[in-house]
Image (spheres, rainbow, N blue to C red):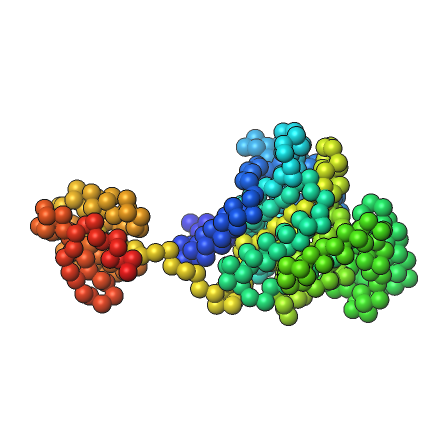
Length: 420
Ligand code: HAM
């Protein structure tokens, strides 16, 4: 029978890889607490209409990468209606509107972590299912929050152990100044349309800003293109200047990147992405985000400022691997072994050690002691608690599996002893 394998563009996270993932998730959870974000959970699938309106019909995520789903008896109409979420911002904004969250004392600071789905061509660092840590702030027009979020993302990368991360930032204006900038881009590129690739030509018609995003764009054409910062209206210009001044004040590493336009249509003003310095162009972004002051309104809510970012956890872990970052051990693992059928004693001692906070793996077999110790060491245990007659006095044998040294100590002393 042919073997069944994981779908293309997905990965199984085996236990040894999951260690780094868990670490990265726990750093993000701790940061979310320290930056006072509240958790929100939204469905993994939503109406296609939500993404089409929110992210834009012409965004790659909607136009090319939508992961359609239907029910068990799914009809074509159903498949046309639902899609797995390519990102969480649109869903969070939908929930914000649906539950009247604007009446809560704001600004609201929301966070979620989980899988996203884009039916893209799989390659290194680009998957069809990947995980993001996402944060959103609703109801804060900034600019202090823009700088705070960029500083937060920097802190995340530093705390997971990555070095050399730089924020690329740009301002892409708002409804007032974007249209003239689009015109300026069209005027710049149209006379050279024969030098544009097929993708860029199409983008020129539907969303000229995204021509700048085309990796294959002729470098001369890109360098001479009009820059959004030169077309900002006065309020956008002031906002961007304030964001940059605040980034300087908090010492966040950034570069203004005039080609940074982001791939989703909801962005206004501040846009940013995180990359490893010196590896620009070779590697996809580790994370990105920006302001979306018009999105709540586009999705049917009252005008509300918004800003957020999504950090790709898969790419973060890949970058940690490349930089040789080691994940701190989760604490000592203790095996509980014994003689014959003393399983009740083993389970009772294991429970006591767990009460003391240790990670414990009782041996459930009645094999010879030597075999139990061997398999404990193979499972990564640093210590074995050996149960024998001295348990009657509240004592056990404690064996250091690295050195082989052994002594008899009270059950209540084990946790202190193994923690060193
Ligand atoms: P995004 O730039 O599309 O933004 O995705 C954010 C991050 O998710 C990327 O920088 C990357 O690390 C990761 N990512 C995206 N696609 C893939 C993929 N196919 N495979 C692996 N990793 C991937 C957003 O999703 C916005 N919702 C961010 C945001 C939140 N903006 C405002 N609030």
